[in-house]
Image (cartoon, rainbow, N blue to C red; front, side):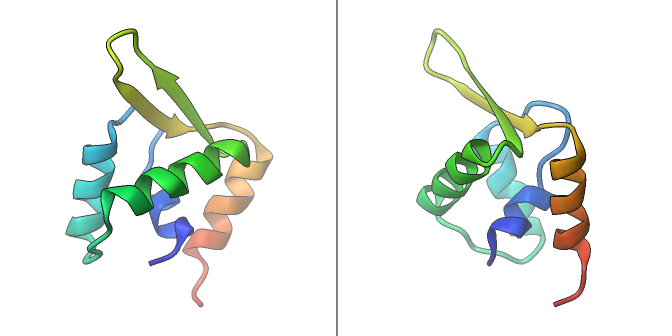
Length: 80
């Protein structure tokens, strides 16, 4: 599994990490929660994902917007 697989499971609506895990599992991947968390952190640092943390310790993720995100999604959809 590649970071682009995680990127393709995100949307413009906020999602929790377990929802992203479920979408990856439905696509035939068996990622650990640690891998997903690390990948989301990397994608956030790259400006492709927006993270929102709540006062209660929850964390939500969604796609950022802009040309860099569009280019990353296009590359993720391209065949290997």
